[in-house]
Length: 353
Ligand SMILES: [Fe+2]
Ligand SMILES: [Fe+2]
Image (cartoon, rainbow, N blue to C red):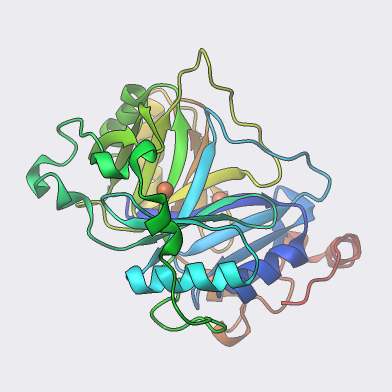
């Protein structure tokens, strides 16, 4: 029984076409599946990822055109980070996004990686983070997570060299996404919000068996804690992190546009998923029955603050019902909705991939 890493994140979009344009044309991801929310077939479910949308690269959206704007908070997600290979790639992203008139913050040195921050058209906070140097920069591999570490002073919000951060940008325009910039390795981490990190740690470490790889402070709010869990030494693509907010002062998350609906961790197969289901039930967590999501099988539970956390199988993947070359080009429906295709299509605004 192993959690392999991140599988996908599902966010809420107010406009499917605008989301397609942003994630494909601006960020260079591939639309790998156009389908509907199986639990609400009147709305799109769009999947973006690498060439095949392999687990860890999948960023997905429900389109809720009339939903209120969501807000981050306890029991919700704060942001999602994508992996870029190196610092030059990060500087090129800053140039490309800035030239597109987007507001970009960074590059900020997060000690374990360097990061840029910006928002998608619905206000989702996105980060691009470098693969290195990783979590052994301030603790040895066999001691990860065993101590509470302070950020280096120069990296804390009050002490940053703002002029140097602003000046750090690639010198030439970046009209095309070069191979070194490509976000094909998918997610780096997902950061959520907890009211009690010890309790969150019990869920990820004790129940899910993930490695607590770092206990530090929020570099942007050094009065609050920031902990990281992952696989191995905290490989990008396996990382889930939580900021701790004091429940007496902080609000709860509000689901809606620009917010995460849920995120999923990857499990190897249906057999191990059933074992996880039993383990979660025995640990006192509420868990859904296994749901057939066609491209994977899923169970749903909640973190201790109520955030929906899914465990999804790696197989069979998105090439199940379309050739790889045609992924994302047609509206695909599961067999049980195929008989309602004309009604479903009639209710959706067609999108141009
Ligand atoms: Fe982050
Ligand atoms: Fe999901």
